[in-house]
Image (cartoon, rainbow, N blue to C red):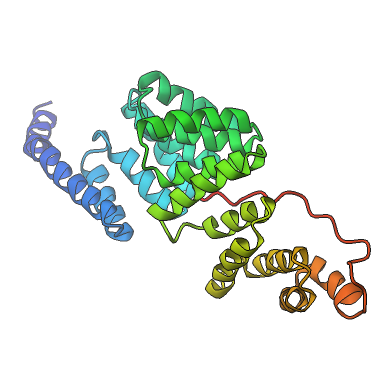
Length: 291
């Protein structure tokens, strides 16, 4: 008995100093995370949790770091642990809903978002996440309502502006969608899929010359949407009855493996046809939303 009491007393000073040291490590992790130094942030978060497993914000932050590192399974494990430590942290459920959205689990995302909004309905990120979940679930009307709320709370949210533009486009409000996407690009010119989505809406509203300029910027960037942009640029030239330039773009798209372009080159560009026979029907393009 005496020895066990001494052992407990011997450990007491270390327990007392562990909390301040853990706090320092957590602060360092937060700073590194804000600076996007993710490996460094993760190392500090690991240290903070090792020193004080129940430190508030520890598992939540480590989950956020892992999510940004695209370790979704690891992030989810940490968010589950975080819920046991701080179940009233609204931001925890916002972060966890993001993992569900990334992995297309709409019902699970909605459950977490509702928890977040029950705790804090003034968080624009929670409303934006719900909009993303609704968009993925093909509820564009619901997504639009959520985006209006998110932008009311944070008007300069480029992601929300972009998604609202995309949703308006899918609801056949293309002109309004163009305004939103242009506003988003003014805030973040390098937004993924931004120019491509803008060009498609310009094409849909028959702004062919403007759309050609937009698609040319996408093509010059040589990203994953290059062949799609080439196809749409060709469509614009075709609408303007410029077969030479249309076929030049369709041939470039075909060389990149675009299947509809291969058909058009074979049955239109390499013939004397004035119109494309049995022209391939393309559905409305669904934009790529990066979360």
